[in-house]
Image (tube, rainbow, N blue to C red; front, side, top):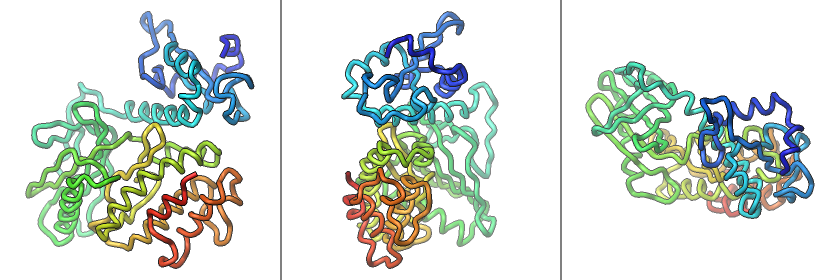
Length: 360
């Protein structure tokens, strides 16, 4: 990509790209400002090429080839790397890296300043959660939910482990004993026990603590990027369909581990499914498996509906195939979704069959 081509990129797009990336290389995350911030070494790289004979020329070129969605901010070294060997850096992989990095920037900006006093909420999560002498830093305001009878506060939050790993923290803070509070604590304890078995596709436990007042479980995440943020309305694109088809394998494996034990997630949504920078999908947690038991066939339907919405932009409609709504969806993929969306749970097949049918 010749430097002269950069004149085509509007100033507002340049500014938006530098802001979205926090002025860091999207691949190696190296800060790009030098000389006190008065100069920078950042280079704007096209994912699909600006010219028809550029690197990754086989990629579908968007209408706005100089638009924010087709640009990455890179250091000179990473820019040379992706353009020298474009076969090793296909456009779908670069788009996944871009989505993951820009999501990381959003989370980083939400982290509390280290010099601010800790504001620990005794009935929920504070900015620091300590378990076994290890401090986890909450990345954004926790989700707080009070139990129906008011006896427990359920908190959930993304956080950072001391070594920088991404984690997901859930805590049940009990104000006094009740059947509902006990039910929630037992569900969290049961999930912690299941995850220690290291079953394929399920989250890895990092820490757990059970006291009379609080039950806490910390699990590892590939990133803070959710399915919703990763695709961000771009699921109709052919490359996005391919990435989604490949990425669903790990997710189906995790659900299969639950189903093999007579459990089901029951709460699949575009914010409860996480993705790494390559587009592989992961369960954030075990969902409602130990709290509100349902049949595994409901997981099959929920996942198929999520994927259908991602690749078509609209909810499923009876007798209207995803391949009809989006020509980028292969017939095999669409047939797998149609079967999984059947009103009759007995006709949906299992999660393994859905995963196999989604492969392109």
